[in-house]
Image (tube, rainbow, N blue to C red; front, side):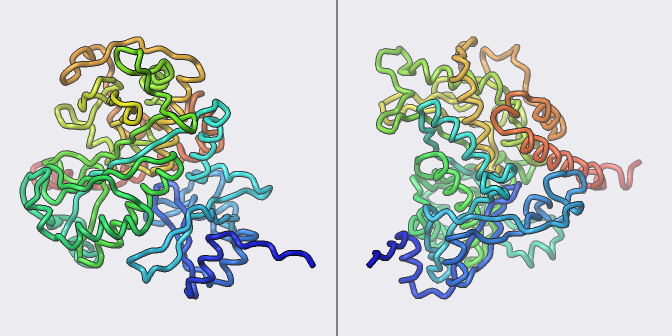
Length: 454
């Protein structure tokens, strides 16, 4: 008699869990996880053949308003279901949701190939090209974010004005502030670990109610998964304590913005290819070419790591966010901080992105830019800066608006080469939409400045 096929361990674990449901999620364009519960029997079928998920998740903005300028999805297509395939390697249980089984999914096209505007597939496209180069990108993300003593109801009642900070004062690395709302702090550390999002470090940052997290280093796809799950998970855990985390890049002119730094290295599967003990800087030629690629062309990918109108409010001279494509040795004022030490620790920290990124797209952008340098054998043409932009006087600063970077992105041959025409055109259209919404909005700044006086 033929042997019964063995179940995948993740599917077997779901069946043994006793749960009648499974939670599944996908990333939309803005990095917001969209998901649903599936009955456990429906899930079992979805593992085999996928499941339908309305493609409107790529056809609307963060507030569910449908774009009027996209071609891949839109009213002209009727917003049909797209096919989503569950990635069993992402199996988790959600500790704050009764340990319900959880999985991420990828969208595929009608032929079973990658759906061209799916953010997770976009990162996988870049990683597939890395594999052809014989390298494995490794990554880890850090996020800074503000926490507020708010709920969705209280915030709606305030109509978006005057949130209550979780704690007062500018108190970075504070053990005292860690003791404030200690239950929330501990829940982030312990429950994220149980959610397979291991945290290397968590501390308070400079600003009222600001925390910073460092998520453990891993292969790049897993790192992006962990990052998007951390952002959503922190918000869900916060609800239990009537705390509202915000990953907005800059919520107040009075305080520093919130970063989404990306640490990276390249591996051959066993060793760190960025490290060279013979180099005075301990940087291999491969590392130098990777860094040169980011310095040379990262601005062509800029909307992928500065994706919102608000992203550019963080790019203020004299604050911590770097505003020029500069590099330096262990220099936190540079856009690209080279951390060169042991064979294990040598890496690049790309400090441009804000906390408002879609992790899949930000990681795709920085890795594509770096690997462009590797493919072309680019060399560093400028020395590292010292101090605060010393040596960068003649380097142009970054644009200050989303529309400027979006135009450059749309015209970029490098972005199209790495990400595909369909993705570039679609993502550029979504950023142009975002810009138009801003142009139509009347802000509190305008009311305060003009309402009485003009």
